[in-house]
Length: 448
Figure 1 (cartoon, rainbow, N blue to C red):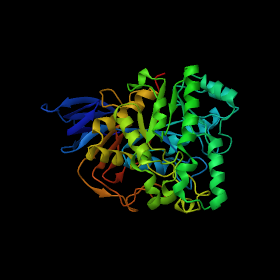
Figure 2: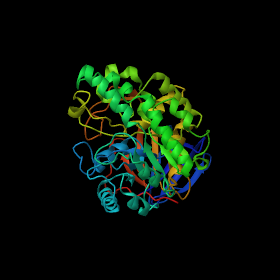
Figure 3: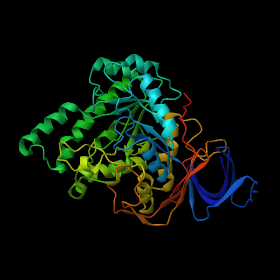
Figure 4: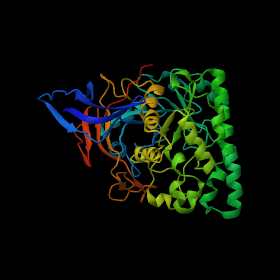
């Protein structure tokens, strides 16, 4: 393990900015000096002059689908963690709808072993709920498992949880956050049948937010919130997509005071339904991208702390799969490499302060899931850090995309900020386009 002294960086952390220096030793942040002091360079330490750059904590993405095991033609724990690190994401929480699905402790242990062998970033895995695995859910270790994932909308295999008795049992588990994909399946099926009668399988993708409607989201989200409040569950509503759902959330404030927490994804902040005409099924996600009014309401909710976390729902599919007709084209798209550059554009456009972006992508995920010593630039914390050149424009193209599928819905988009260095546990894993793959990431631990 190398040691590093980062000097003259603009440190953005815990709602403040200051110029300073940071010493990384043995995988941890050993010392932070403010500007004006001159730290000595130890003999076994590499100097990195960060003048003109921003230093932030590594991004923690609480919702990704890295497709490993079983769906690795789309992505795997090596390729997608590599893309994540290129985008400043140092830790991720992966969803259970792989093949096989992560619905037993043995399968969770196998997935952890796979990540220890392949992932360049730090990792944790959601434990998948079904209608009949309550005993497994109750026995899961909360110190190494980020949360329970419940699909209350359409999903693969047997992961649609629609049994009221099973749901109540799951929501009674209080040692872990219960993350819910909330879309009402009956409404979606009725809407889909109406459009199938008119268009067959080749439904224009512009109708996706009508089929997977705001009504379907609200009906399912409101049911989840009602159940969680009755049973005192820590409910985490993921990928909110509508303005109406915001009325279900608790008043703005720190997550430590909330039992109902929430997440919004980058694509629901960046795109709206007018973009289907140009992007087509490339931006077909579940829940669907909806109206400009919904997008603007979600941005305001990030700004005023109604919404707690910004994540990606990174879900790669091959371009051949996405090119199929509407009913056959899968939902989801790759995003983890580009989430931080996208959100920094909101800062450059004067929409969101950079401190707010860092809070939602770094600090609050650590707080909400009670991560051990990550998410902040603090002495004694793991050295998961990112250096950014705030004024080095670049354009997304096929030559700089690291996803296994090789495409992005953001292709030809120009971003003002560039990630130049990413440290994971003190290792400089990404340095201006060059990867050091000699050290893998670690299993995340939680203080619960």
